[in-house]
Length: 117
Image 1 (cartoon, one colour):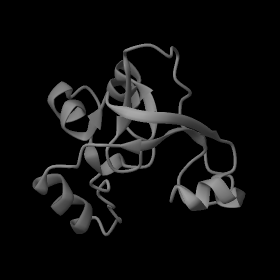
Image 2 (cartoon, helix red, strand yellow):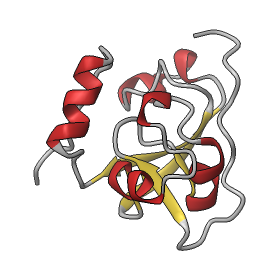
Image 3 (tube, helix red, strand yellow):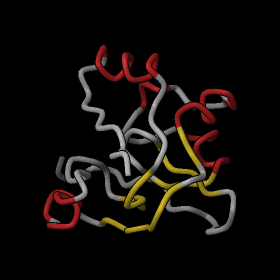
Image 4 (cartoon, helix red, strand yellow):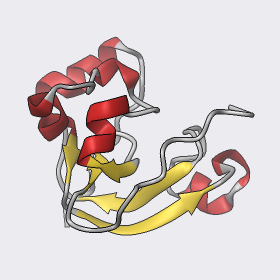
């Protein structure tokens, strides 16, 4: 995915940050409402508050910025090497609902649920 347009960079780093439950992209709630998730456009997050709550979480651990995920060993290790450049979380603890997991399957995109501790 060379020359991919980067995702929006979070405009603040406070409590309004959320992470996509599929790709772990981190943005503010308002940014997800305005432009959705650049890696998961099929979630249709634009102006859908309930969908944003279903597809993203404020509960995540760590943040990493990726300028060229495909060439980064950390990007490959975190399984974000095929995603757009942006800010990502290291881990989320929540899983997508079964309906949204089925949507990922229908869209032929991989979903890796979080590991149970």
